[in-house]
Image (cartoon, helix red, strand yellow):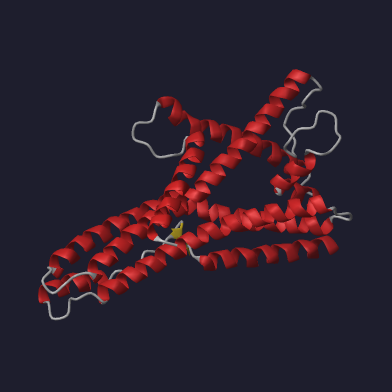
Length: 311
C-alpha cells in the first residue's frame, strides 16, 4: 500500500471515529459547549441504570451458575431475549428493584431507556476501543518522521542540532505515553478482566445448551469474535508502540554520528532511554502477551465452572 493510500485510510478512520465519539461526547475539543460536556454524564447515568438491572438479577440468582452466566453474557442475552414471545418483553435480561407494571406508558419508558442504553454501549465502547489505536498511530507517525530525519543526515549536517531536536520530541512522546497510561490504563485492566469472565460465561452457556440452532451459533460466534477482537486491539496497540520506539532507537544508533564528539553525547542520552511501553495501571505491560493471558484465563475459568457444575 502506497503512503498516499495509507494517509487516506488514516484520515477516513479518524473521521469515522470522531463521528462515534462526538455522539458520546468523548471527542477531545477545546471549544466544546456545556451541553456537549454533559453528554458523558448522561452516558454514565444510563450505563449505571442498565448495570443496576443486571446486577440485581445476578444477586437474586447468585446460587445458579447457569442463570448468572446468562446475565453476565449481556449481549447474547439481549439478542436471544428479543425473539421470545413474552408479554411486554424488555431488551436487557435482568431485574429492576421495582416491578414493571403492564402499563403501555411505563413499559415504553423502560423500553426506550434500555434501547438508549444499548446505543450508548455501542457508541462509547466502539469509539473508545478505536481511539487508543488512533493515538498510537499518531505517535508511530512521529517516531517514523524522527527516524527518517536521522537516517538522512549528511556529513555537512549538524548531528548535534538534529539529535537535540529528536531528544525534545522523544521527551514529548514520553509525556504522551504517560497520559495514555493514566487515561487508558484502568480501562485496559478492567476490560481484560471483564472480557475473560464474559468469554468464559459465553462458552459455558453455549456448552450447557441442549438444542442449538444455526442462528444461535452465529450469534454466539459473532459476540465471541467481537470480544476477542476488542481484547486483541488494546493488546496490539501496546505492542505497536513499543516496536516502533525500538525501531527509532535503532535508527539513532545507525545515524551518522561516529567520530562526532558533540553529537555523541546526545546519541548516548537517547540510547539509554527505554522503548516506549504502556502499562495497565502500573500492573502489567500492554502487549500481545496480555491477549494470550486473557485467553488462558478464560479457559481456566471455564474448566473451573465445569468442575463446579459436575460436582
